[in-house]
Image (cartoon, rainbow, N blue to C red; front, side, top):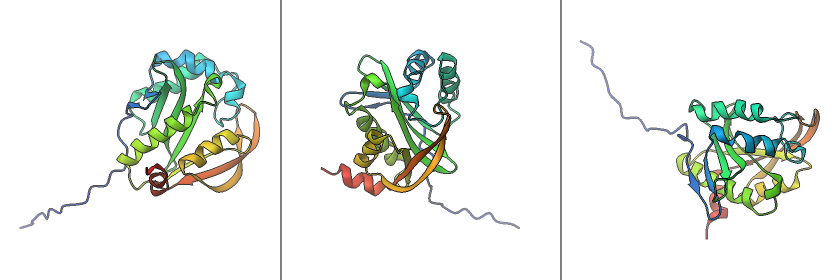
Amino acid sequence: MNAAVLQKSDSVVTMPGPCPVIITERLVLRPHKLSDAPAIAESLGDFKVSRMLSKVPQPYDRQDALDWIAPQTSGILPDWALAITTGDDTHIGVVAIELRRGEWHLGYWLNRFYWDRGYVTEAAGAALERFFRRMPNTAIRSGAFADNLASLNVQRKLGFRITDADQIFSMSRNRMVPHIETAMLPEDFRRLRRP
């Protein structure tokens, strides 16, 4: 007679769950909707924005935005791609935490007309705080092109540290561009957030 042995295992959370809605002092971060496509196309059609992103082609149009939104809204991806919106639900950018090659990566962009107001730091900080509540022992990677000092400054404020430098291909620039790699452990983020 065979006996089955039941063992209690420690459950380990390996995915953060569905993309949440996060409300900050000035912003609402929410899952994307198909109706966000025109705003995304307008923002990423601006070369001053797209030149700082590796995977955004130029020109960028509404169909490109719809092609990106479709998998984001399908529920099949483990990623969080949060629309950064103002109080009137105006789509002004994206903050995303994506699973790439087994590691979690923070990425973001903002419509140029909303730069220099601290929105990306506020949005990324709120997304990371929620992510670390769900995935408390997970390191996050990020990075920025070497000529994107504003983005590197956002990452420094959030607790990221430079880990490497390399060159990666920029679709909008159509060439290899120097890139700074960064990483953050959850305790680095928590240490900066303590009152």
